[in-house]
View (cartoon, protein in one colour):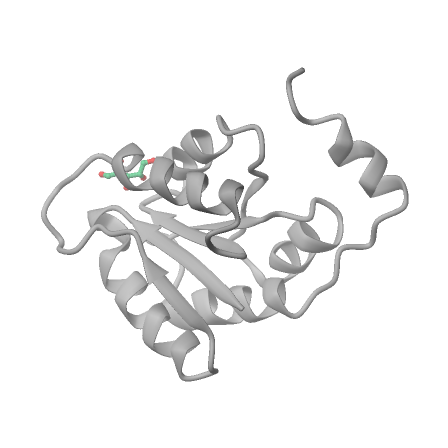
Length: 143
Ligand code: RB5
């Protein structure tokens, strides 16, 4: 399992800590930046992460910015990406179970770091349900 991860300056500290947390569980991480708390533009890291997920260079992605919205908006411009914003554990589960999110997005300025870990664990530990949800996600891409 290889996970790509990115953040802007607002999510930088949590990204650094989450990489350590996930590596300690034996997960291989690929860091797409940013690499400091200096102000930057989230699309500059979100697009490369999205492309890596689409190409299969990484299995899944995780992205964080202040609210999560800028990352989600950018990632979801890519036809092969289903980026889901989660701010609690139940949504972290549902975004996999119902939406099969291949990128998990979290709002770094609005949740504590232990919640970031719990949401990530919930998302990784949940299976996509398929069935009626498969039919729905098949209708998401713009033809
Ligand atoms: C940065 O100030 C902030 O706008 C950004 O982290 C994010 O919340 C945008 O959606």
